[in-house]
Image (tube, rainbow, N blue to C red; front, top):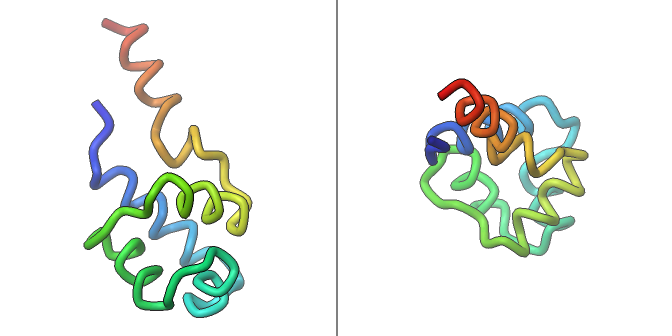
Length: 78
């Protein structure tokens, strides 16, 4: 099962590994720097629209962030 914690961890790592500041990410996805910080810390989850933009800006695969591959592999094993 996909958890909020797994999604938060992947967003956190992606933001940390990017060469962008939270302010720059926020400007590119149309949210305030504080919102990016909340996504990174897991206090808040982005809307679908913002999530798509976040994936584009950070060059991420949404399936990976949402742990879709992990879930499919789990289902196949059971």
